[in-house]
Length: 112
Image 1 (tube, rainbow, N blue to C red):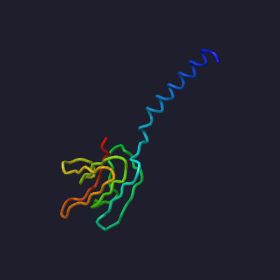
Image 2: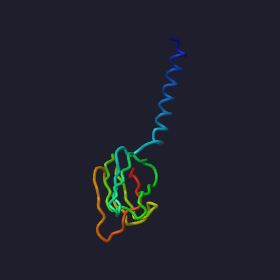
Image 3: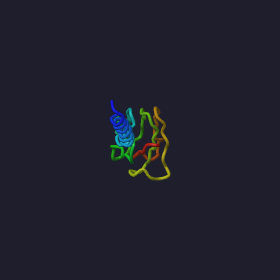
Image 4: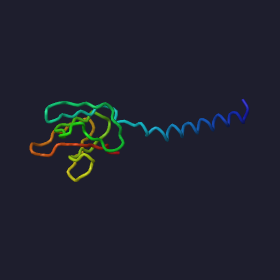
C-alpha cells in the first residue's frame, strides 16, 4: 500500500469520525419510557422521546402522575410551554404525584 493511499484512508477515517460525532446528537432520545396518568385515570406511555425542546404532555387537562423510567432527568411544568416558576425536578427512574389541589403538569423538558 502506498504512502499516499494510507494517508487518504487515514484522512477519510478521521473525517468520518468527526461527521458521525457531529450528527450523533440530532436523534438523541431519553432511552426508556415516560408514563403519565390523566385525571380520568388513563395511563399514557411514551417510548424514548427526544431530549430536545419542550414536550407537551398529551392530556389537554394535564396529568397528575408521572413515572420517569428513562436514563435522563426531566423538569415538569404546569404550563404548556415549559416556562414558569412552579416546576419540579424529576430524576430518572422515579415517579411523582401532584398534591391534591395543586395544578397538573402540562409539559416537560430534559435536563442536560
